[in-house]
Image 1 (cartoon, rainbow, N blue to C red):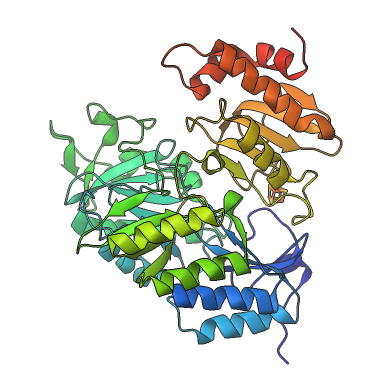
Image 2 (image 1 turned 45 degrees about the horizontal axis):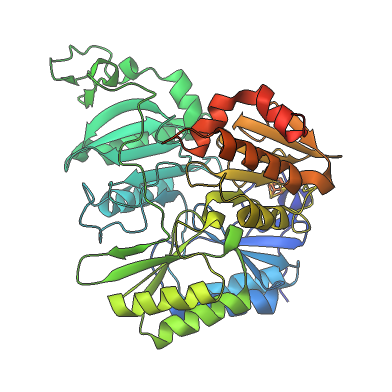
Amino acid sequence: MTTLPLDHDTQDMRRGACPALSAPMMTGDGLLARISLTGAITPKELADICRLAKRHGNGMIDISARGNLQIRGLSETSAPRLDADVRALNLPLRDGLAVEVPPLAGQDESEIADPRPLAEAIRDGARTITGLAPKMAVVVDGGGRLRLSHLLADIRLVAISETEWRLTLGGTEQSGRIFNVLRETLVVDTVLALLKRLASLGNKARGRDLARDIPVSETAPHTQPSSSGLSRGSTGVEVFDADRMPGTSPSMTAQNASASPFDLFALSDDLHAVGIGPAFGQAKSESLIALCDEATRLKVKSAKQALDHALLFTGPEIACRKLQAFAGDCGFITSASDPRSHIAACPGRPACNSATIATHEIAAAAAAECGDLIDGSFKLHVTGCAKGCAHPEPAALTLCGTADRVSLIAAAKASGQPFAFAHFADTNATLRRLSDLVRRERRPNENSADCLARIGSARLAAAATGRP
Ligand code: SF4
């Protein structure tokens, strides 16, 4: 029998730990292993993974916000068996640096450029770079309908034309620091040079560290920007000085914000894709197996992990529509109008040792009772602790479990300053009071996010505590 080389560090719920397939991480319900795929698989292969989750784990599967499958409830004995059995399926498992592209890349006629060749070249080139942070991530986003704008990335490339890519460091597309705009022929070498620099800084260095340490001018120390902003540095690298570019700034708003994956998408080659996901990113194996079996019966060609805890099934339009209806009947999220698609909830109790609240129960009640509040203008964040795994970015409203109660936070991360607290048993009643306030106060054409921001913390605190 093979056993995993699990040491205490591996099993520790340390921040930043990445539960890969061969290096699972301890959680409240046992070890958790992550399966990252670089391409589509068949519905039958996805069902095979679910059967392995049932055989080796507790049968619960997470689909993470980045679209990875996470198998829960493994033991030190069963985790290596899962590892071996998954590898025997010959799936396109990610090996090495995470270089992510949008789920419709190459099939979306509205995308500006196909990001896959660049992503593949970066993935290949990075194989010889050692010492990078375990959760280092590169995003290559060619535009189109499903963007990766809200995912955190150490290095992000966004197509701004068929031959030019904007490179940002750290953060989301909106919050990342613009490094420069590169011609396509320079992208791979530049990204690999940045990765080598990060590796030289140690395995804790992240893109945001480079963003602090490398001013845009360093890439072109002796340049004389032309009126168009394009210039040639001493390294021969042609750069775009973003600070000199009219209409751009490091805080520029992400363009072409992503649509929800919970929809039906027309693709090239007469194919369609339908986005389907379990509530709050977690499903029982049996439910996913039933969905995959139906997809196979309908001759749906492939399944792919997507963003926002969704799976994208691709096939003929009629098959996708039938699968969408089947999934809806089985309780999956199939539409952006489903309030559950606008709630980010981590596994919470009892799945995670750090959680003090049952996040999914709270989130389910919120979706049923607070439709006025959850209008799609923001993600309601329900988190078992201040780490905020499900939504690392600021949210308009967060409910966060603490040792003895639930904190309520506005316009900040889960670790932000609370404006009020609720007793555990009063959590959903408190949220209903806030929802009622927004319904009463919302102005014509104002959405919930804007209304919450306008109301402000003092009045939110009064409403949360039931004061008039
Ligand atoms: S945010 Fe949730 S899943 Fe992450 S450590 Fe805290 S309780 Fe656990």
